[in-house]
Image 1 (cartoon, rainbow, N blue to C red):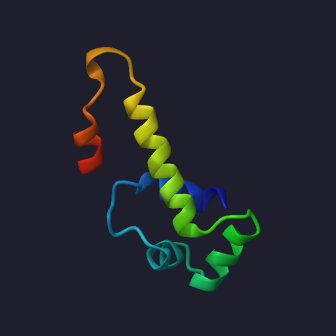
Image 2 (cartoon, rainbow, N blue to C red):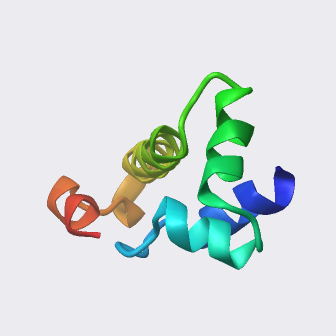
Length: 76
């Protein structure tokens, strides 16, 4: 599960990130991947969405001038 979560984190910016792609990269079935996340009380897409929102929140909370605009974050 840690390897899968690391893969997701490494590909968060990729709009093609999907359950199918994650399963294929780890040589498991889509259903098995879904069951792994289900045992943790979430879905694959829910996990991806939460991680993307966490990254947006982190970027928006940067202090000073280094903080990007909301529009720039939304575009990414």
